[in-house]
Image (tube, rainbow, N blue to C red):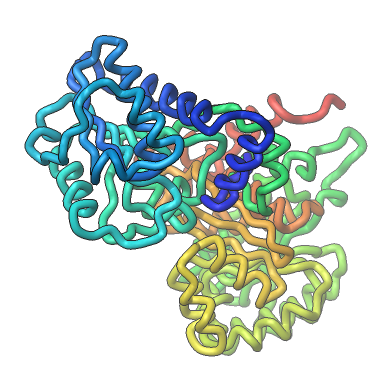
Length: 500
């Protein structure tokens, strides 16, 4: 599914209207979708308050109010500003409303069964102040269920950032496509359950205006997924290498290695210092263990060309030794996945990392969380950290590094140097647990080892990781993810795999 910025949504509206669909007709359809959602979320209650703003979002609210009143609901409509100030389609929608348009009253808003927030939509690009901010704060204080029109008021539709104050909605009804503000934090937390309503904007216009931003769903990468073949064998499915830390910190490598094997890599080897070999060998079965003492040892191991993809970082330690290991793997021209300590070891020196990554024609995959990302660009590329949008921040980093950037979080963004980007929204809150990132790195490594393109592999890994967390359920730990991933992959294969 394409994700439309507010500007792109406006262009899709404009093209639809230019092609012959009146704007008021689009507004009527939008208001009808909001009314349907409000009737469901009212939960048997009959008193609905509709808060309308001065623009088209308010016009949608006028339509919803009229339709709900026709259905027998007790509707009170509150308008921020004067009715005579409304223009265009919003003025037409207001003229069709036969009830009163009251001045905003916080006490009256609290005395209802459901609120419809039609103050401001996804196009908001300024901080709320004055009566607008007081209205948002009163909505949140009311503790009444809220259905937001398009996007909760106070959220920036392009970035998901709060502009002064923002409504915390129970549900949101948006139109045509999701907006970044529905997916990026904190917008995702404010939007509640999001419904996308079809209001008659043709797909051809969406394709005409949309940029390379999508929701991360299987359709994005299913065509590149490395399905097992009848004539295949393990040596054709890649040989992944996970570089382990010292004896006391081997857990991260073990989690990653098991995940890489579960994701389908034909063989997986953990490369480790001599002192850690016994610990690893005692706890791993299908995963092999090989000695690789420092950067020189890793370089020697990678002289075997069959070892085609390497994960560095989990439990490796921050410093010169890890930088040396990254350099050895880069010089060996292997597909690289860099996580955790492999990223932090280049803190403030992203330029040095760029030089290493340029040695390989295959773009590396970096999988930082926000803290690791900030450390990497803290000095020589600090301007990247000043970008408001997580999507644009990840895109800028991917372009600067010449690598695929997987910027983790509840709103994980994957960005490619060529500008493509995807946002994920399937991670449950209990996925935020120690070791979960190591499993994610391992899944990505396993897919890349099988020849899946890096951008597609990164998105597939994020999606499968989130689904495995749902499968494992609340209370899971990172050790539960690989067994849960098996069940996810079984269903995934049954649903999507081509017929042999």
